[in-house]
Length: 379
Image (cartoon, rainbow, N blue to C red; front, side, top):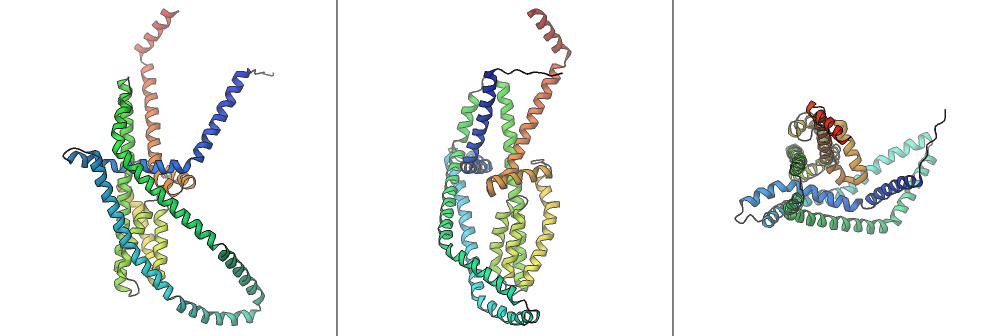
């Protein structure tokens, strides 16, 4: 039996207009992803700093929101400047030390190469070695030819990052100052008090998720950074090649990269281990072993204890959110992906709860009777 479905022209046109509209909306969002990242990062920072700014404004004599935001920003910028001035000198010192030790390293490799040359002559693999060396030389030539272009591109990327950072700070400042007034205007548009209270409760829950995640992640990253720095400082007492001031870059690198969920701490451990290997190979291996053990302790005890009941996302949901955030929006997306996922979870829970209440109300005998009487009166 054949079934024939007839669709009028208007319905057909409307359907494709909706599809095309969705396609254009997705394309517009993808094209504006950089701007969305900047705005989202600023909103994320504003939500994170809103609590301290609000508490500070309540203690000021005139309750000035602008003054409290300016004080909070001054403290944050001062901390960042202190980190930069404390971290950069040891890194520059280690880089200079590595450059000074490069001739010795080359001499050692040359001595080893003589022994390797005898081995090559013994097994008659000189043609293969010459081919590999020629390939490396060709790659080096291409890299040298494109060095100028890569340098200009790097300078442009650094300038773009600086401009984006400045824009994020300005947007965050304005959001903190004007946020309460905008919320007051928004709540003033509501005519239904019950709906307004429901949405206010929803906003409070989402803000609690974001602020709780930020506080917990900062605490976990701070503990990890301090423990890594203390480890490097203790190792400097046993390995003379490792300077004690290397502990400060260790704290800064571990703290900053640990803010990236799932992968950041591992990247920090690899960087610091390589930095230590340049000074002492045993020290780098010892630190790598320490970092692997500490990550197990952090993932199984420290982080669950601090982050418990803040977001309540399963490990699969966290991994999916971080993966999407990293591959679509980069490092910034990886940082804000978990609180966004937690906020979406709050929205879904609120939607399901409202549907459950509606169904429960509709199943009550009195409600059914009123609906039946209303239907009879209309008929």
